[in-house]
Image 1 (cartoon, rainbow, N blue to C red):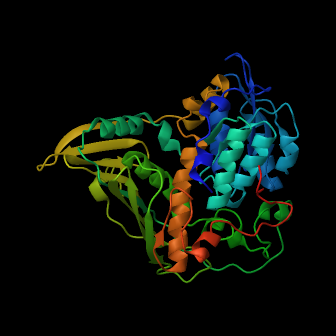
Image 2: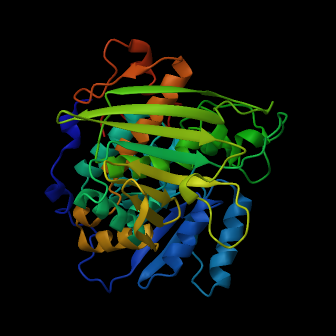
Image 3: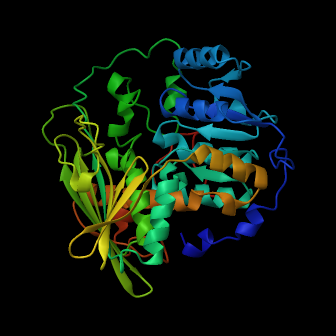
Length: 436
């Protein structure tokens, strides 16, 4: 797991030309959307609005979801896409240029690797990996097969947040030494659900894929899979990965030297395995300069810190999703939906601010056309680095102790138990390969 393996030439990533390496901006790019119940529908909507982009195929293991989305595309006046339940059949279709993946987390890296191997460019939802090993393998596959791979951390493409990062880099806040990521989201109990028969039209074996096969319950299926270690990464790896990525971006750091997390599953007696409240701290020391990141997940009552989550419309909102950056000259508050404000000096006078969004999918298609990895706002290697922080925090929480992390070997030296949790036992034939 040597760091140098990640630092492969970006020039090589732009050199390969297959059918998906479009020579003309007028050529139609054919997209297959995989995993289309929740966030996958946002993928469908985004590509449907773009010129010279065709939704050529839809893929989902739940036939009822698949039928609903097929009808939705047709009702919008678009050509009916091809329908699949198995991504391997999608990848065998040589007419598909792009695979856009919004499945549960435990499938992300393997599907991404398979797609790269099949010569497809990839848009991959966050987090790009379920564990550290498979994230590393995904980056290697993207580089080896010269694929354009975008990570679904959408804030990287919002106009306001890109400006906010420019302001930090220009020194508006002075020496930025600390960031806080806030994921305070109102989430009710999921209760307890009994073992039952798999619903008709669901290929549960394919849905399970690389994870251990469990008896079917509703809580382990649609959406609530986020709260089980087999398939999800808790809210830090769900909503929180967006804010984690922004925090690392603003601090200008890659890998931590020390990680410590503490929390638990408070208030509710239900089926959840992952913590609904957790505080993780990360220490960075790059080029002799220390920086600090604090990340907080809270599942119920919360205040709106620094105005994050307050929209001035008189309504009461339960969520506080965003980031705070602290510097020697002031601080910055970022709302997770595309807005930043700054407060400068001892008197905290209002400074530059902006509220403007953007499209990560449009940026991805631009890079698919140009064949330039450098055109990506959320390149997969950046996604892997941010997901790695989530995984380290969860490992620290589960082991109940702090971790020391070596950025050169990408391991926890002297801590075999922690390093073993960088990967998992995969269920054949859904195995993330040692060699991509």
